[in-house]
Length: 465
Image (cartoon, rainbow, N blue to C red; front, side):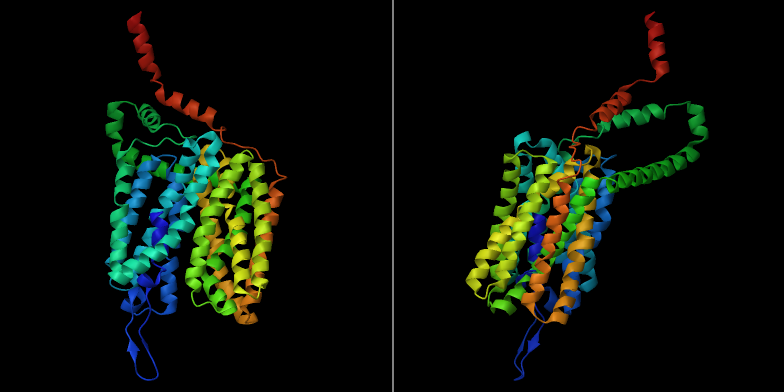
């Protein structure tokens, strides 16, 4: 929630602000917020809103890969520490580059839990409520962003935009501390950390003279081996993900879906103002998004739990909800009256947001448990690189060519049908739930970690004889 509050806050008028302006009569108004204080042009201002993606895209696969050899809660603690430091840095920034670098580091913090939190929920939620729990988690995306608009506008207006960031850092501070001090997290599909430690000690046991003699060589070889082993494991895991038809179909549908959602969030208020001459387009679109986002996301989780949580049922919900949502959104943009638009667009958004829990459920369940963090990380990276990042400028190019926001919005909304069609294909694939697939491997690894060296066992046997 705090992460997405920050996402909304930096886009709010109170924090983002505006440049100084002067009228033809010579009356000038001073700049405000980040843009006014640092005298940023619109391009630089736009970079700040998406700079977090640099850290997110680079760090997500790294944290997911490290989860195989490090305690995930500690990784979350490290990531949220970076987030807290970066947010405090945003409040203390002195120019464009200083705040841009801090915004990139914010993405590193988000990456630590975006790929690890969902597997944790999947492991600990009651069997009959797993997708409802996931829906509650992903509900924080629209709710947090909308709350951030309000928070940023109030704090930035009453105090200063820097205060908004400092308060966020203070509010987040307890969470990285908890990541370091609470009981270590054991994700399904991974051997216990203590068994890995014991196994490592057993494998490294040898003659003292030999170890002392080759100490420098062993240290260098060990570091090289660990790096190579980490790389080869990551490569094998990536190959397994990319050869999983269910996973690929799910992510391709999600990319198409996010292509539209990303452009909606950026161009929606401007399109609404142009088509319906709204004076409060920001407030209207923000209000619709928070209400419909919460209702739709929770409904998606509850419906999937109600009809039994399976991958096949998830694809059915994804295809049907997206198809119907696209129809309602298309009809909304065809309306000439604002009231008709609001009614149909609200229904369309509720249907569209129903997808949040099912799409992430598929990403968690179509792979074996040890691949879940990487599955979530690659899904997140993909929907940004191929979805919402290119969609906004492409829609801008289309609008420059057509010069009609109604037609542009209709063309954009039609991409939802592509997403629905891709997810419809998923219904007919071999949808095997692989949640319990790692159990045997995990048991073997744990037992092997608890084994004593053979000579120690023989020595004990001789002493007993």
